[in-house]
Length: 476
Image (cartoon, rainbow, N blue to C red; front, side):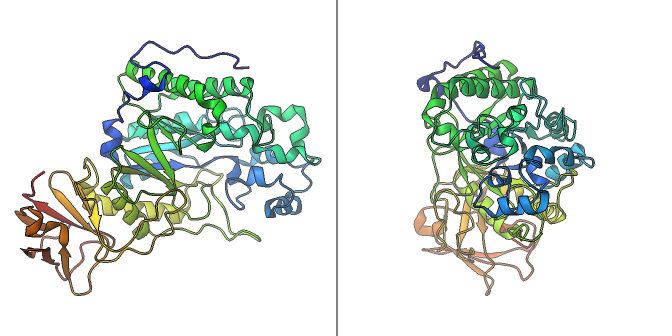
């Protein structure tokens, strides 16, 4: 199946890095800054460990393996496929989800179309193992696409299909249902990770990814890391030219996310998993991270699994402000339950972020970085898996963004109510016309001294998290 290369439609792009480097990131993306990622799949049924349960349950030295045998029985009798009928999604209401994401202030929505587990969350003609044909028996991706657009947000999808080549290889090492050819459509090649993917798999990968594009017209396609393996390289170029030319044909700006060095710089939008940059990038980029520190998919408190370790809204908003100041976007992930409801703590965190954005959004949306991203003592560790490692921000930590005015966001509230911003002293050459605090009607006392702009804040905080000074009259 899929032994063909979908024909690249005519358009501005050829499948060469030279041609693909002419790519420009979409304005909806650079203006929107904040999106919602959704890890929802069969792995939310066992709700144990994290979304890698399908792999871990077949690796004999893991807690997932022991938990599985103890809770569900031998791997020959109850395998990963047997969770599918329990993935019912009976409460799934795509419009309610979209309304929540809109209230959270998100501008784009990216469900996982297929995770490493090989179960497509969309209606694929290339597989029987899909949410449209089993489990929920609904095209959840298609329904979410429609709802997302109805609420005025941009729709994207993620594909983690590349990793499926090796994801279930543990099940080949002992008696398990992975070895039954009847289930090859789900468990896939299940080859060792150090074997390069073959042409059949790569052609199928390309066919599935192009099918996703044609069927749902996503404006963002997010890829996980394993596409960086050398055999994928010509397929990535082919896919990018295919997708970018489709976007041109539809008259829609589209984007691809990649990690590490999978794409040539400037040919797609660079993404850092759970991580940030310590300084601005001239190229627009993204941090994808989860609302929880320990899992992307839904997990429940049960023996051997402590449940979700959630970040605070303050932490997430601080990261968003820092990312925006450095020319980036934040894609924040949630993990719905098997019945299609979103866990209450996640709903509450999203609504709190939305309240903050309602008041302070003009410092985030439609902004661009200033010539200085910020100031203050807190160091941001650079690179992946670092976004929970930073210290808490202090009242000396300030981040700038440039929109209708210059915005200086204070990441902590000073005890004495006084702020000094060194980047805006008279010696900087910047002239400040007026200073106000978003969400507060109180007039502020401020002075531009030689080495700093000093501002006395009102007694009342206008909100709970980060506080935005709007500075009118500063030269662009």
